[in-house]
Structure formats: C-alpha cells, structure tokens
Image (tube, rainbow, N blue to C red; front, side, top):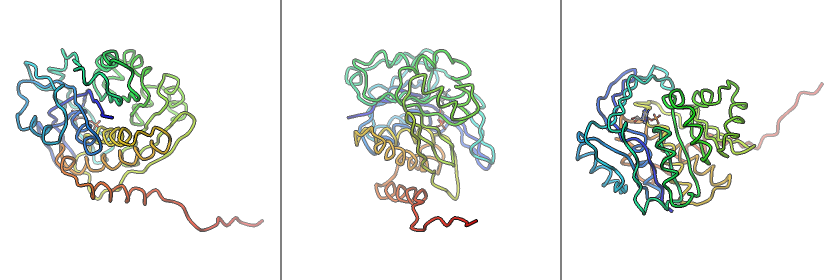
Length: 311
Ligand code: AMP
C-alpha cells in the first residue's frame, strides 16, 4: 500500500550557529518523501515555481518518488529562512515567502485518490482539508504535521482539519500552542478530544513520546556527535514513520513502535547534513545499524533486582 504526501517543496536559507546555506532544496514534502521512499512507494503532491531547477526535479525521479502530482506554476518556488541557536532545538523563522503556494489548490490524480496512507505535511490547513475532501474514499490512516506559523495564523481551519485525522505529529511547543495548555498531559487530552487517536510529541534531540489513546511510549533520538542542520528532522521522521507503517500494515502498538523507531532513524540522518544530502544516499545496512543503536539506547532491561532499604 503506497503513501501520498501533500506538502511544501521549497528553497531554504538556513543559518546554524556555525554555518549557512542559501536556497538549498527543502520543504516538508521533500524531506518526507525522500525518507519514506526507502520503505514504500510514495507519491508527492506539491507546487514549484518556474525557478525550480531541473536537477532538483531529477533528484525526485532518481529517488523513485512519483512526482506526477508535482505542479509547476508561474512565479517563484516557496522560500523559507530559519536560524538556529547553539541549542539546535531552538530556531526562529526569518521569513516565509509562500510565492506559488499562495494560489495553490492541490489537484489529485485518480491514482492518488485511492491511497491508503495519506500524510498532510506542513502546509496551509485549508489545503490539507481540501486534500481529505478530494480522496475517493477515506484512507486507512490520515496523518498530519503543522507548525507555529499555521497554529498562530489559521487556528480554526487547523482544528477543523485535525478533527479528521488519525495521527498528529507536533513538537512540544506546538502541542502547548495548539491546546493552550502548558501541562503536557492536559494538552494531550485536549488534542485527543479534537479527533486524533495518536499524537506523536517530538522533542528534538530528546526523542519522541507517542500517546495512543490512554497509553504512551518513548523512543529516544540517536545521540549524534554533530548536528549540521536540524531542518527537516520532523518531516524525515514522519517519512520514515509512515513508510514503515504502510509497509508492515500493522497499526497496533507494536506497529506504531516499529514505525516510531524508523522515524527516529530517518530524522537522525536528516540532521547530519544541510538539505537532503545525507538522507538521499543511505544503504539498508546504515538504516539497520542506526535502528539497532537506538534500540540499544532505550534498552533498559536489567537482570538486577531492585534493592530496597530496610528500615
Ligand atoms: P522541520 O524542520 O521538519 O520542521 O521542517 C522544515 C521544512 O519545512 C523546511 O524545509 C521548510 O521549507 C518547510 N517549511 C517551513 N515553514 C513552512 C510553512 N509555513 N509551510 C510549509 N512548509 C514550511
């Protein structure tokens, strides 16, 4: 069963504490689809402008990503600029130029309308809702990612869209912003009541907590000696997650745990370079051994018995 992603394809300008990169290929759907394609067929629906480079279109083809839904419009490709602090969990958006995205209305081809796994990557919630409405039948899983830009600017539309979604990917700050609750447990309760049965709370280098109805589990992030550019970690995480979930077709807790592990693996590769430089060239061995490293990190089973103080 294949995966459909609707999101942004962008040129990003990123400043980290030590380096900068201008107009690098980015966008939520870009990171997602490249991470996802290792595990399943993936189709991308997005829009780019007349300045979009042939090399970048070729990259999607060489990654075996279906780009029949990648429209080309008159104008400039979406551009985003961001700056990270030394603590790479903290960033601020410097600019968000929607450009061709401002007038985009996703047009789903017939083969896209029957997809079972739909990922609504970070774009305008009105577009996300339109995509759900354009599906011929309800996908098995609808997942959604968003960010402060839309939570602050388009809250009612976002909540209306979230009501139709199974899995929500947000970072801790976004969870608090969306729910207007500081306490994470209260915030999760409030978001569950909006619709999604599963909420993936991303905590950057500290990993993720997945809340499924009344249950929760944690998967740590790989501890890396150097984070080159955190951009796209969340989207690569979601790409690995949805790719793995759709490939095993198991949406029980076991399936979700596996998907979360693969998400953590792909997120960790995304931050090892600017743009998709590292993400696009991975071997199965590299993916498997990183998964094993993360499993080892979280394996706290011990043969020792707890010794209690006698008094
Ligand atoms: P992440 O680091 O996973 O949150 O994703 C960063 C990517 O999201 C960048 O490549 C940006 O091009 C893209 N992006 C940033 N802001 C927006 C936005 N408002 N709408 C859609 N995509 C965005």
